[in-house]
Length: 193
Image 1 (cartoon, rainbow, N blue to C red):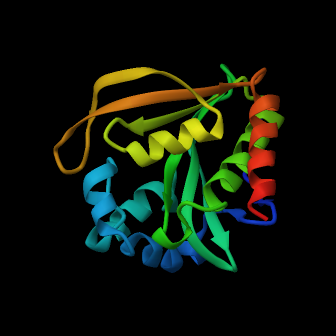
Image 2: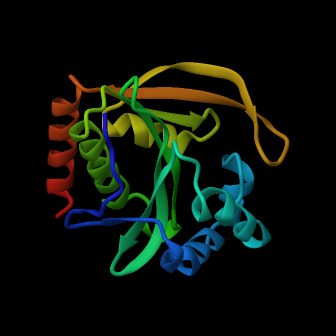
């Protein structure tokens, strides 16, 4: 697996490698829903937490992380990333995803995930996984709706920034499952216009 950062685009969304030019739009998007950061994420990008975590995750990201600005109508409205990129085992995680409230529930998430999975599998991935906080019912439902398979729960997997101990639900799509998942996403997106 050899995956490179590049622009990914379809009619609903444009994914651009995250850069400084996306910083203020992402700050605005993250500040649009501070409760989500307090309740559902292992770290916060809202308010006073933004700058330190921007530096940590986007300023100089670890080598096994690739971040994409989610751009709609010319503005960054969120972020999604490839995490734990493991070229040797041809595996990666799609995560670190956040969307501003105004673009949730429509074509943005399935479009972004369609582009990211196509890029991953087209680059030689054997496995794409998603990890979701067990209490995040909305995200769990969204990952299942993408066509991923729930594998199990990692109990007491991590301590989130608020001190809560998180259980993590693991989902995956394998390379031989990708054609059916892709076709399902394409059919879903075709109905959205």
